[in-house]
Image (cartoon, rainbow, N blue to C red):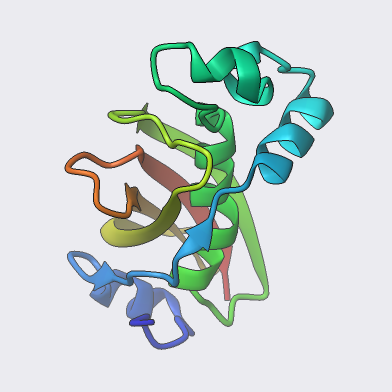
Amino acid sequence: MSTTDWIDSVEHAESMVGTRLGPTEWLDVTQAMVDEFGRVTGDLQWIHVDPVRAAAGPFGRCIAHGLLTLSLAGGRFFHDLVRTRAVSGINYGSERVRYPAPVPVGSRIRAAAEVNSAQRLDGGGVQMTVRVSVEIEGAPRPACVADFVVRYYF
């Protein structure tokens, strides 16, 4: 996996603008993963959790929740790609989120990122905007593209 060095200062974060990070390792999207996400969030729509009914649906099988893909983009994949030695880090939100393609259960996904901006904050911090793109193996369009806003204090 291609990643950045550990970001250890505001200046280092600023120098990362325009840098592409990744990709991560591939992750198998399983029915168990989708079912658990549906159970925890209460989103038990058949397109996600009923393989028999989904087989006759528009995608021919179950698909992952868009919010599951977003959660992986902002959680597991983000932490694999953007590594810091900050004293504290805060997920400050998202600027933009799109789901250009569904993620079929049984597919593999991975992510890459690009640091779009880094602005100094009072108190030794930096606010970064990082675009994370989640790709589906063999698919022409990404599953999710999201601009995450994070704050780090060093």
